[in-house]
Length: 226
Length: 82
Image 1: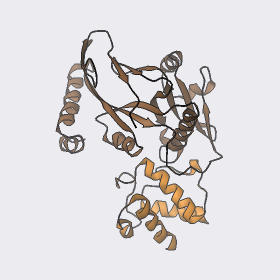
Image 2: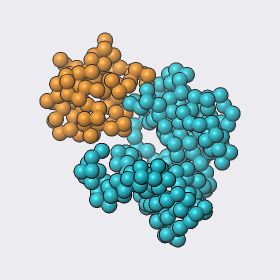
Image 3: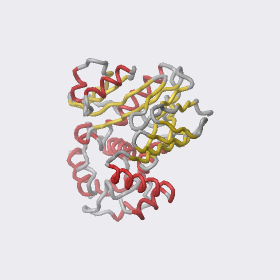
């Protein structure tokens, strides 16, 4: 992406942060980074989209820990094991038996895996955290993601969940635009500057600024008022 | 020809192109070239095509090549409608 394209798509501040982060990362061999997230909440069980025609070739199902399907996940085994150990739940899509994608749902709190940060859901009964929403390239153009999300959405709604939180890179305009079209509610931004073990975080709520060598800041997310 | 005209109308309606689709030719690029055609819009487009042409499109029939150009999408629809 050119500098001008960055500025046009992200605005001056985020374009500067993005480019600064790229330069820092290159100069430091990846030890220094700038990461900025937009925190969003997606309403659950309130989609006004037309229901999708069922597809006999597509199976949507939960993938519990130890399920053989996990071998098809394009993630390191220790990452998958850590997620299950933390209590995350996985729902996968299979098209004619072929792994096509997954969505992970975490309850209570989610520990960020790119920087040190813990997102805590204030109302665990009505809020969850969704992460690593992934569809294999073969099925990326089509209805697999919509089916997968719709399936997860309906399941969560039956359990009384009203909101699913997630974070999106503030430098990914396409993803931000796609989430906005899905009716997500903006819950603020978090900016992280990482210099080796030192991390400075600008948070959307108290304590606002967090400096640390080891500890992770907490961001408490309350259900949006609507 | 009839299918192509109907397909242009569907593209205009679903993507809110304001009549721009009427000028599409076989080589007009779609995916990646039309900002309105994102992953969510693809879902709406497939559903609209199914309803308008009375066809059922399986998930594994669709990939990026189908939406590469207006010509490739039109060929796919004509084939599916036969």
